[in-house]
Length: 362
Ligand code: PEP
Ligand code: MG
Image 1 (cartoon, rainbow, N blue to C red):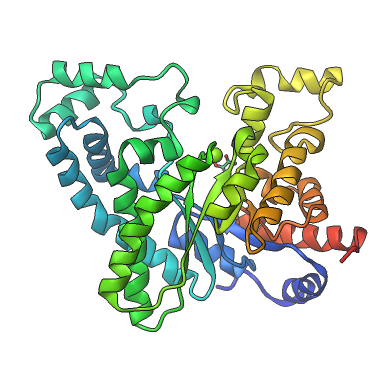
Image 2: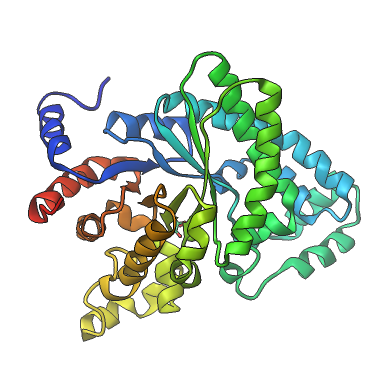
């Protein structure tokens, strides 16, 4: 049953004539990708890969991979995860044939992947053939006081290069196989939580080696990109250093809001409503972009990024990508696209057109 018909299609054709911003979707499954496409999404701007691992059979493998002391145990878990990821990506690429798909490499706060209680520790210990006491000790050593500021994003990728290598193998193998069959695939590999150009440079070098080898073996021509999220103030301020190493920037305004305000995105409800009532803040900065702080960082990074790399593509994939007020701002600083959840795509398209009408500068 098509969701999109009649007047909606007509309205969207008018919208498409006036808007400057493209609209992509944040989708982690082929189903969500298809919904987004039906609503007019022009690609996937963020495919988060963390959620792919929460099924019962997968989470055990991920836990094994993270807590393994021995390289062999980690390699075994990764070997089993590779075909699972390959099939995840194949389905998403097929759903978005002909459109770009940005896949973000693993970016979990580590604690989300660790066994949470004695029962889970026992189950994992049994699988790994170690004692629950030894495993508990290991898990304890991985606990962080501030997981959101801890071993996340590219830090995880640099500490455990095999994890990102497995994911990149899955992305490139899936894409090459589809290209061979004549399917048009445009993968974009996104590296999260970069704060220093060296993190991107080293991660990218490792990934390119893996990607090139697979492409060479497959004997296909694959058009792929590697880029980074800009979600830390340091990354925004040093965007001119980072841009020559990146094919694209995607602004992660959820983390950028958290780190710019120094305000936990998970606990902000404790006082934000009062702050708004007291007039300290005009509105919730996790919903509508805080133009003078977070927005200014995005503006500066976009300007510096473009000056240092003329070909760089700029988008945003935080929650703000679906918020009309924020879209007006992103249009004014001439980003290339916003990305939001599938059901917000029509509103985002409409908001992009309204923003272009209000601000008709070319
Ligand atoms: C962000 O930080 O804005 C983002 C899109 O990533 P996540 O919400 O997954 O941290
Ligand atoms: Mg983030």
